[in-house]
Length: 471
Image (cartoon, rainbow, N blue to C red; front, side):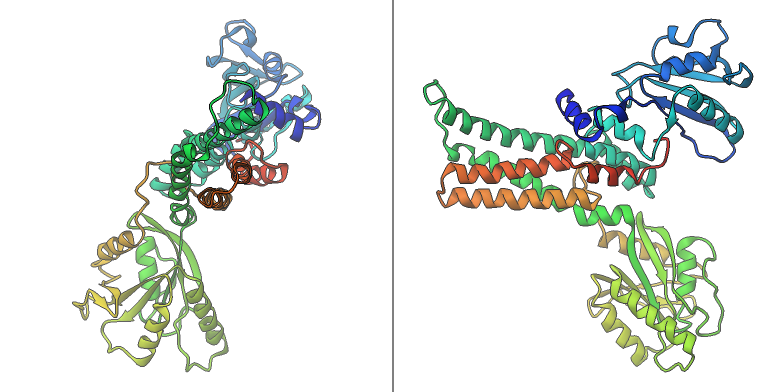
């Protein structure tokens, strides 16, 4: 870890100038709250805490042990009291960032927090950038890159499943898998080069076939990870779901019922919804990005309604899940059947017969599409819709933390798997060990990108730009 941290500092930090800065930020936002937190990290953090925080005991803050909350007064550089609060310090390297840190837990006044921040700046700190605390934790070897990405995933999690998986990743689930595969490939490469470079030493002969089972095990691990990527992405971002149907079929009523509040205007007048409306909702434990579309009416002469219909069709074409709503109180029309044919082209589709309180339907399937009969007015049948969505999008049967949730991770695993497969094929064709080892070394490089061993500065900056300031 220390070796990697040194390489990162040399590569990213321009002679350690960047890492030598002491940074400070408000970690709890800018709204009024019960408690507000300002944190610092860097060589001057504890010295600055000594100068602006006066423990009620009369001792210096630096005389206290790590992670002990101390009560006292917060003073600006002129000695004027800004707040009565708590302070804690921690010394490198056993901190979140790997550097000396200080944290002030104040009353949640934005004015007080801003005054405190300005006092730290006056004493040599600077404003932290987005994600800079976590970025320093990564660069100082306190966490791997997949663990760092998990921090923002926890903050952004919109479901219990997404949060649970992110916590597992923060605990190192994917990081450990990547490190294990990297170590296996490094052992193979080391054995080969040891035999090649020291032919007179008593080293066991290198035979590729001796490593065939190990290579196959690692390839299966990569395949297992990659198989979770599509569901993981949908779990984090939500499933694009188009609610479509003819005018006045009950689309907006269904959307409002799923959201739990009146987001879309509902009237008995056909064509009320003229544009697409998008909201996220948790349906049966699955996060859906619901898109309520304008009623599809190809005979309308209304220019605005026509534009709405065009947008509805575009939403239909892009959707991962289509919910086709048909009014159960009327007979199915040719337009309904045409929409059903279009909806069937989506990866997943559910046919909903609305207004079941007026005319209940008994069908459970039509043309291979699951059918749900419900009433948005009474809520009857909504639970069946939730169960249907759950069956369509089950979570992968893997431990929490082992679901890939972003494109960068999935791309790295995909490329590593392709190279590992090529290495196995080369070995099965009895190609020379150096050809196989070239492929394995490329796989090591890619897995290093996944874990952060050899990731580029542009990728690192892109990852941490997603973070909020103070994290």
